[in-house]
Image (cartoon, rainbow, N blue to C red):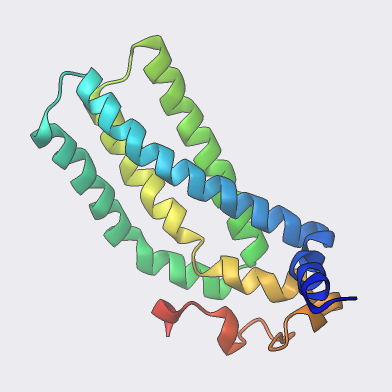
Length: 165
């Protein structure tokens, strides 16, 4: 086999593991949702006849929520199952965004709904930034040869984000 073909096979090998494929899919969908939230937030504020001040208020509440819960997320990641945290975070995000979408479609959405949704959703999204990389070695323990520095230790240095060190 050529080197290119071998590299390509090594690149997709982890996706054969169910847990890794689910984790990767959740990350892709979560990242897409975060981008959509940012864009939709602007349009919803405009739809509610809001201007730059109202948009800034919603964005500020998002940041305040992040500051309030980011340390709590790190503590929870160290004490509880990373898989459970990721599943709960994604489930909560789905329910919260579905509720927000239903309010928007029905025309009942108000500015404070956006603020509350942002206050809860933004920190919840960052809640899983610490446990998600820690799930990877556990997902791929049986075939860790695809990653030369893989370790079966959940606290291996390569799987902890740089901002957590």
